[in-house]
Image 1 (tube, rainbow, N blue to C red):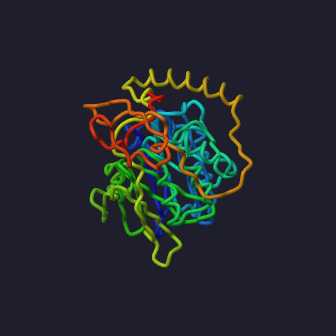
Image 2 (cartoon, helix red, strand yellow; image 1 turned 90 degrees about the vertical axis):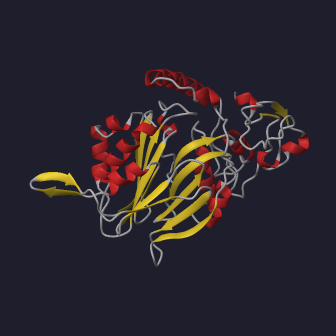
Image 3 (cartoon, rainbow, N blue to C red; image 1 turned 60 degrees about the horizontal axis):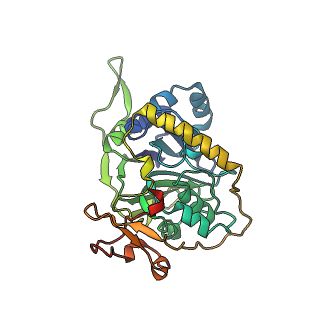
Amino acid sequence: MCGIGGLVRIGNRKIRKWQLTQLAIELQHRGMDATGFALMDEDGAIHIWKIADPAWKAVLQKDFHSWCDQALTDKTRILLVHTRSYTKGSPHNNENNHPLYSKPIKGVVIHNGMVRNDDSLFEANKNLKNFTRNCATDSDIFRAILDNYGGIDKGLIKDMGLVDGTAAVAAIHKDSPGKLLLLRDSNPLLLGATADTLAFASTKEALHKVLKPWIKLHNFPMQVHAPDLSFMTMPDQTGYIIDLNAKVPGLTEHDVFKANGRGTGGYVRYTRNTSYWDRQDRARRDAIEENRNKHSKTLVNEGTKSSLSNPKLFEYTICPSAKCNAHVELSEYDRSLSSLALLCCNSCGTNLVGGVDASVN
């Protein structure tokens, strides 16, 4: 579980530093392993700051305030915020933390959820120049798809649907100034708005805190209790594109987005309930292992931009039914299909969507 949120400036009300800090702190309960921010200017310039600290500690850093004072200007139009509860990819390697991007910065992604087929998608598309793994995090597959696509429009939503897992995603791209992509399958994502601002977050409470303005009343700083706010839950299995440069700024395109997210599975060894300090010890061990592996693997390919390929499915999977959990061997024909959603368990007949590579467990 992670927390994602953000703001889109549509009218005259500027994005303020207190909104960055407030949104991160309100989402902190969903992830304390790292905190990150991304800002997009009206010309497409992107500014990113992230750290392997919980939000309360991150927003006290002098470096954060120095970055914010320089990056947050009257030209800022979009804000992304992420609080991380890490699964795959140690937070002690900061490239694993969200927002995710490659250098030079092109696409930027934040993600709440878990991806099961990131390794197979990277392998299947390893010859594409713009489809390179930049970090160990499973969410990096969304960033790679965005970089390969080269911008944000309705066709990107279809490409993002190659990912198998659970997802609430927000993304921006330097070549699509003023555009925000929102995706949801299974994980929560809510929208809130005033006349000047559109906001999104994993929880409605965070939207309340970040959209209510502060005023001075009787010489006390107070937050307005009941301003003119509107809310909606983003429909499940949906992709939205918000465009600030449209004739009527706001939602301009939408499509179905399915990541086959219903069910359990994935990187099971990362999801046990542990204390914060146990997680930190595990993160340090993972970071050592990741840094060791970097010396034996290349992350850069020399291919050309092209359309994406679907990888073959793995050889064995586990039935997602809690009453069954049988190991299912997939035939050569089964592995040529595009998704486990097309297959059923041999033992109990349960649809295999949500099944995982047995070697992961």
